[in-house]
Image 1 (spheres, helix red, strand yellow):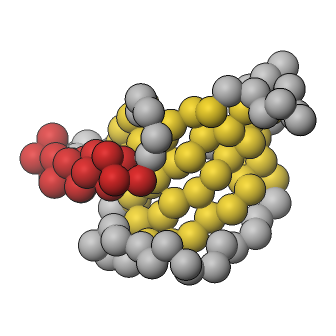
Image 2 (spheres, rainbow, N blue to C red):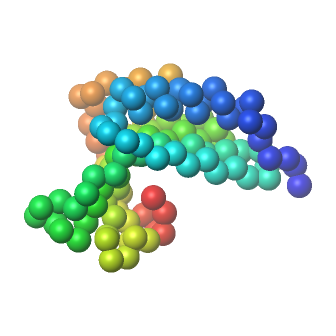
Image 3 (tube, helix red, strand yellow):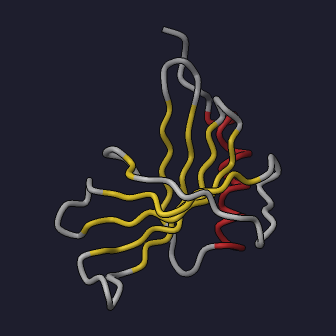
Length: 118
């Protein structure tokens, strides 16, 4: 076993992700920090949108993500089935530049089902 990442290693990217959330997400946010024994970590910040009027069984999450193992910053939209919250579909995903700033007109990458994850 190596070691879990230190809080100091997580703090800078976490603060940057929170700044991005203030700039890009509507309303209240939730955060999630995942870390592994090999020292890698993943950060997610998202805002949830209630059921869509035309899809009453579906909620949506606008997600910002950083993974230190790959250095990837990304933004996406996830559809979540209300009756089975583990049934999630990634509607779009785009990689953000290393500084986390995105061109708003960048094309989205269409992606299919996400197996058991958000």
